[in-house]
Length: 101
Image 1 (spheres, rainbow, N blue to C red):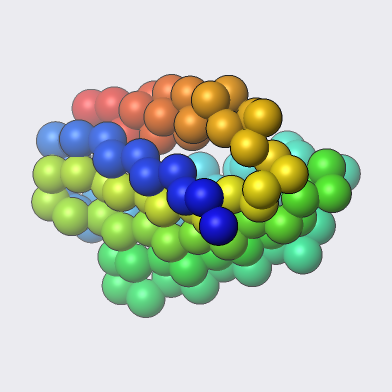
Image 2 (spheres, helix red, strand yellow):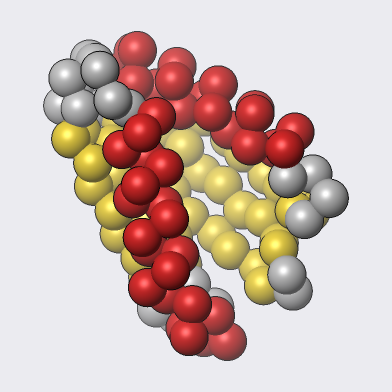
């Protein structure tokens, strides 16, 4: 399965960056609850495992927050490959905005 990997540097420190990502996911779930189903999210300290279904596609991924960067890996369904560039761009822009100092 193809994968998207996005790494975004930050200057927030590990704890603050993880808290921002957690808060962002709560808002994201509320905002897009009509478009996202089967949402699973499991945090273990500063590591995240997640999965969700949207527009008929099932996505799975992991995330990790360190002192200086956040990294997200998403397994992309083959059928969603035509949207890879858009998905990657949106994710990078969103992570950059959420982790901006």
